[in-house]
Length: 251
Image (tube, rainbow, N blue to C red; front, side, top):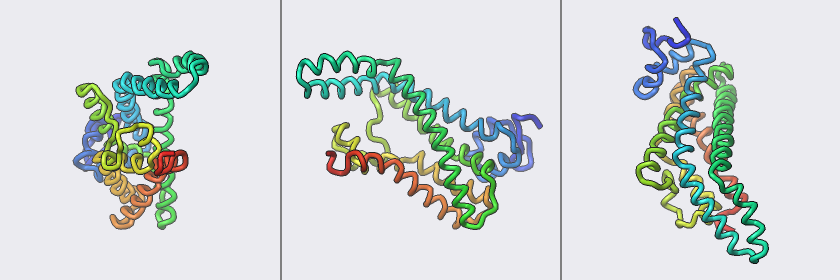
């Protein structure tokens, strides 16, 4: 067996079939992946996630740049003319395409990796508390595979942006509470919270539950409870920053 193959339902399977298997045979795919404890089993889905993020960022950056310039101009209009002129020279660097592209790719990729590690840590300690006998390595591997729906979501968002010529400003259920003012909505924790509630994130949670059941040998009920705890922590991590820095009042 090469590093590009593992077993799925007793048969040798190439990596690309495992990626497809996470869609229609997730439980069998998790078992197949965990049967081979080599570096590519976690690196492959993580690489796919990062590549999809790069595609989404490259497609969306020109539109992000335009929004950044508009917001910067609004801020300059609130300043005295002398201060505005001095600030405009400084802002020109931070609202340039190379700067926004580089920072978006760098910070975003780092956050994706840290988010995967954090997810694995939550599931690992949750499984230990629930009485499971698990190791962090297999839990991390499962965590990387559960994030493939998020990668698909990034490609869908990139495709929408490319064809529609605009960003998806309010993903998920965020439109239910959004005002249309990006500055105000950016300080509303409900917008951030409901923006996470979309199909691909819910699909991710389903895979988390199935993955925990496999890696920790838990019942579906126990795995679902751990998944719900993980979901609450994830949503809190998204909502708390806007709550601390803006709150519901937007001020």
